[in-house]
Figure (cartoon, rainbow, N blue to C red):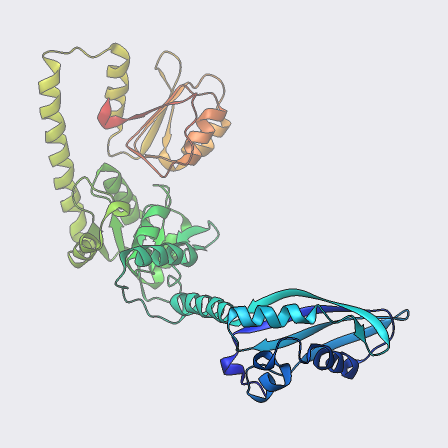
Length: 395
């Protein structure tokens, strides 16, 4: 009997007989018609006794007076000897009383099949059986992390906010601005994060904040100030963490994320810190303007828009302007999308104290606006060619 542990190859051949034959007929024809054909070293009976060829398996069926089937012969011989044995099967021209033809379909390398099984199982183990420790190979680490980031991100609440998988079950959560922030924190194993997707804070965030300990993790820029200001008004925020000055949460490395979260402060202290940030940015802006004003005179249009943006700073409001830059309407940023949808053709541009999101941009293109002026650019997938996008600090 062939030991399956030593099998290297399996010969597979097809049978076609012009008559009704059965398994014993096929086996008898194989032994009988190959006997003495290949010499003593490759005699099939001796090879079976020595355990170098396994049991001959035959599957055969008869229909309409003809028989068809398949032969399988395990072999621990080398590649050349196995090929010779396979070729000898094709010399058989009769099975029982019937003329027949045997054709070798393939010789399967059992070790190759086992290698494929090992590779497939290794992939399963790599993705499902290891904990979150960092592998030594940087390339493998990045590949696995990317798969985990995409696989772990979920949608939460009626607004389908981007979130980590542990937001519902965790006692403490992080509130960030956008989907990219959630993905970056997932990369470092932080799974209790939820994004507000702009400065118009969803009701879901307010409800969650009543049940959990909430840390607002915001960007270190003007957009972060705006988000924090509205969060403090609408949600029950316990702590505030900030990215380094001028940086975004989505771009932070692991050490920077850990440091920022470690240095979080109680929410009641955050207002004073934000005020200092605002003064710092304003002083920097004044210095830049002093340098530019002497050699360069601003165009009237840019000056009008800049004055409008400066007036709106810190108000979380928006102004809808006509073709002459005159104010048609002033609304809260949270109502901007709805107001734009309902606006007529008189509105040609918008200046607002908030983040330019994909939704606002799409509505502006639909309404044939000429320009949008905001504080910061959100997570934008596609910019319409017909709308000019400007940031207040660049005016």
